[in-house]
Each structure stands twice: as C-alpha cells, then as structure tokens.
Length: 199
Image (cartoon, rainbow, N blue to C red; front, side, top):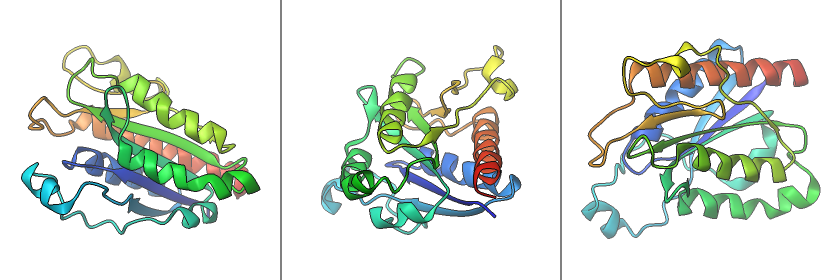
C-alpha cells in the first residue's frame, strides 16, 4: 500500500479543508494517508490578533519524515503569487534530503488558495511544483477528468496544475463542493500513481 503525506500550511482554515479532502481522495485511491502541517513562524500573539486558525488538529511535521512517504501533496495559501513563507521555510529545511536524493522518483503534487480569482493560484502552484521538481519528484496535477475545471456556472478554483480554492478578501468564502471534489480527485490520482510506482 502506498504511503501518502498531505503536507499543508493554512492560516485561516481554507487550505486545511482542502488538505482533508485531498486525504479522503488518496484513501479512496487505496493509499495509507497522513495529514501534517508545517510549523507556524508568526509569533503567537500576532497570530491571535490576525485571527489565525490555531486549533488545527493535524500534527506538526518534521522535514526528516518526508523520505518515508511514496507521495507528498503540498498545499499552502498564496502570498503575492507564491507560496507562504511558512511553507517556504519548511521546504528550505529539506537540503539534506535533496543532497542524498532521498525524494528522487517519489510522487509530488500541489494545491493552493487565494483571496481572489486572479490572486496568483497558478503561480503559487508552480512555486510549489518547482521545489518538488528540484527534489526529484514526479508531478501529478489535476487533469480535466475533474469536471469542475470546466464549470462556468459558478466561481470555482482549480487548474491543471493542482486543486485550488478562493477564500474571498475577508476569508469568508469556504471551499465549494466543486473545489473539494477537485482536491479529492487529485488526491485519488496521486494515490493511484504512487501505487503503480511503488506497489
């Protein structure tokens, strides 16, 4: 059975919701799945004042864990069209894994959120994917087998490069069923791909 890690950073809970949908999809694809979050780097007092969602159930990850998985799905909110500094700081700690080629050939995938439709979803996905490619990983995106990529009747996130959600400028919009379905579909594809590669 393939082992999949869903690794995320979520300040306000939108990416957390997508992470658990991604995990559900990966389990449907036959994988053993763990959900972990990266450490918060913002001082707790500042996080409280900014109304960060600090009661997230997922355990905090350690970069040394990554090599024990067949697939790693990475998600984060967008900061100026790129990944959050919290996720970047975590990935910057993977230098020893890169040096040993510990993740070469493993499956990688990305998901993200933005405040608006045009807030940099695809560039954020690429900022994650670039790191995964440098680590030697094989990328699984979100193909058009997810019908939500063709939805025109409502505002919806999602791109061929990964599942996304739109949070709204005040964070009040939660992931829609179309967006959650995209995450589940991508998670399932990651699990199926990892199983084909690693049994």
